[in-house]
Image: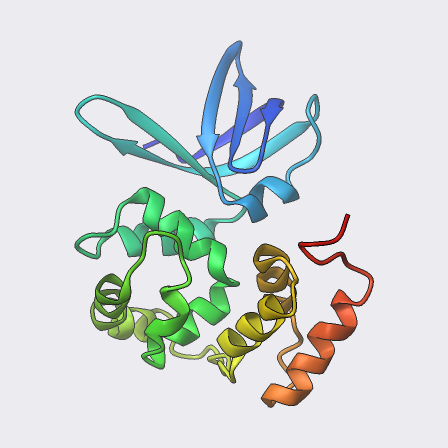
Length: 198
């Protein structure tokens, strides 16, 4: 397994980055969140990695931290979940919220991931609930108070879903209740453009 990749960024877009390591350009598929965290082209980068081996290809995936990669690998243990689906799940929310959704049986959050239907989402919850709880016995599970409803409400107002998800995922844990969290998200979005804006 290629544990990590460290080198100079040669190319970067929403979900892929090419890192030069010892004269070799390695292409890694990432989440858009990880890609945004990376430095600019020409600068040094460090990514934890996962090599997915197929009969006709070797696909390399990059992660901003080891915890994100570990959760990705955990998702791959679920029947019917491949690397693309696992990455899509990681796009939905922060790790703490994804883990909370699994522990609380909130499959609805997982269905927001591209390519993840209700059956797969429910399977993820069923197969990983005990594992996630055992891996984090002392961690505080984040409440999922209507965050999926907040995303839907703000998207209905015309804001871009990707932007809304990022804002809602970053709301402080101390904010409780649909109304309070919605107002906070709206305040943050106040300066942002809606999807129909020029």
